[in-house]
Amino acid sequence: MKNVVVLGCGFAGMETALWLRRMDAGDMNISVIDKSDSMVYTPSLIWLPPRRRELEDISIKIGPVLNKLGINFYHDEAVVVDAENNAVSLASGNELKYDYLVIAAGWRSKSGHIKGNENILFPCDFPDVLKLTRIIGKMDGGSITVAIEGERPGPGAEYLGWIDVYLREKGIRDKFELNLAEEKHRLLIHLGREACDLVTANFEQRGIHLYLGKNLIAARPGVAILKGDVEVPSDVICAVGKLEAPELLQGLEFSAKDGFIPVNDDLSSEAYANIYVPGDACSYGRKNVPKVAHIAMEQGQIAARNIHADISGGEKKTFDAGRAFENLYILPDLGEITVLARGYKTIRVGRSLSALKEGLEKYYLFTHRHGIPWHLEQLVEIA
Ligand SMILES: Cc1cc2nc3c(=O)[nH]c(=O)nc-3n(C[C@H](O)[C@H](O)[C@H](O)COP(=O)(O)OP(=O)(O)OC[C@H]3O[C@@H](n4cnc5c(N)ncnc54)[C@H](O)[C@@H]3O)c2cc1C
Image (cartoon, rainbow, N blue to C red):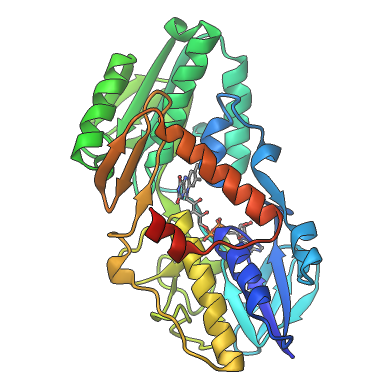
């Protein structure tokens, strides 16, 4: 019997655990660790501030789903990975020994590069999106600035687009100034030229002030300071987009300088053949693989298959980092306008696409609440 420990139960860890169980021929003892007792469907976080969703609507209680499948769940924080001795220590004092370790610990928002970051909310992180939701709900006027930059700017524009819709519905939009600062000179260019132009025109028509080519340098109470010393009065300042590795990964002797873990094409760590790293936690060095949910899920499935191959024999599968951008689908919903893009090219723009985003959410939550993993390859072929 081999002990397989999965550290982190987000998109990648959940998929790995469910696929491991499916492939298991009775020779694996599977344990999952997460510091949170719930997995959150993050693409729907943008609907929290406009009250389209509550956090529970988009969360999956991990323990009941995994326990039903005979997978052990530790609601605990991993504090040390001792790769030499194949052991993970937990904050509770427990230690888990493993034959195979899956590190699927994901990412967190980067904040240290902005001066005065105590005056900023980072709504890609759960406590801050809840705080933003509470604040927006209480405001009856003022100014809100969202600054987007880095690897994951999309949700920032989605948050602001939906805050605009919410304030209109409440009949108080005219009492607000909404500002969007983007470090690039074109808004959301990664959606493709056509979508980028349509979104820019839509935001301007909605009275959202755009500061293009201006990233957020610093913040003090009531003021966002953008590149070029542009001061924007802001009662609420949010920053979205720059990522860094979680604390645990930053301290590992086998992670790269930025904290993410270098992997081979089969997703095993370059340093330890019995450690696999799917999802946002992995690094392909100079090949810049996008950190998105469906790639995390695909990698989770590959990691599970390769651990199964290590234990029971069979062919290993590789992740094609070179084609990751070509196969990258994004579906941001910006309130009045929704975009489907693939490989940074616009496929379609239209309000009806919002139903597709909601459909994916419902399908993910339904299947995973029932412990059913996705056949990602089939879905991508259908798309
Ligand atoms: C607002 C928002 C919108 C997004 N929209 C989209 C979208 O539309 N489409 C898309 O594809 N992607 C989207 N993403 C990106 C997507 O959420 C990530 O790519 C995805 O979460 C990566 O999955 P992961 O499993 O690698 O990491 P995560 O989902 O971050 O999971 C990591 C898990 O590890 C746990 N963990 C970390 N450290 C420890 C520790 N020391 N001990 C125990 N547990 C630990 C965490 O609690 C977490 O559950 C969005 C992200 C945000 C924030």
